[in-house]
Length: 280
Ligand SMILES: NC(=O)c1ccc[n+]([C@@H]2O[C@H](COP(=O)([O-])OP(=O)(O)OC[C@H]3O[C@@H](n4cnc5c(N)ncnc54)[C@H](OP(=O)(O)O)[C@@H]3O)[C@@H](O)[C@H]2O)c1
Picture (cartoon, rainbow, N blue to C red):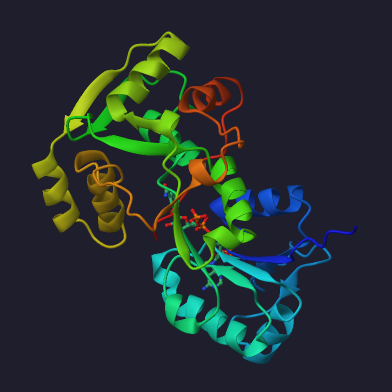
């Protein structure tokens, strides 16, 4: 019997995380469409649609060809997401969409994803592993708050699974992977053990972080506020999952996710690319 794979369209595909999303979708054999803005002349493989989000009719036409839409846009692009939702409503065929915000009211089935910290992104930002001579590291708060440190490849692969899973329909899926709940101090000492280097720690206190976020211009202030929430307040881990929340590990117990330790090993051998400007 032939099993039809859902066609997935990814918005944000050319960005840091979008690249992981495209790989995860294509490597699961889903026909994968990517949205690319018509600003860069060097793109266009065959399934690329070069159109502006303002070109409503064209967008509707493209969306009619797919089943699932995944959007990785950040906070400042909420209005752009609304354009996609409007076109999806008109296309009328979308079985599912994954958009982080502004989705419930559309009436189209959705899944929200709470990925916790992107592992490679934060190992890069906290430990600066590409700098072999670095002996200093900044610790936000006391360094003891727990956070989730999940490799982007796994986040993307879980997301493709959730996108095609009826159990995740109209729900919130949380990637709280037990072996990846870690503190900054623990992350630093594991890195020290792996590299044989000892890092001198500079601590930035809770108060200093608040002051810094208040005195910094946008968008730097957003990044500082996010670091404060994750690393000082521990807000990724200081709550229990609600009854309706979906736990990725429970939904996909056979998925062999990358542990923090394995991620650090990857960094020792072949460091993943650094992400930039993700919060802008
Ligand atoms: N949880 C975490 O630890 C963590 C870490 C980092 C990021 N994030 C989140 O992950 C998401 C993706 O971040 P990222 O780092 O991948 O972002 P990114 O590298 O800046 O990529 C943004 C993507 O959006 C596209 N885009 C930007 N403006 C657009 C517009 N006006 N119209 C259409 N497309 C537009 C870009 O296209 P072009 O290539 O054409 O510019 C690119 O494909 C964001 O929500 C971010 O907050 C989370």
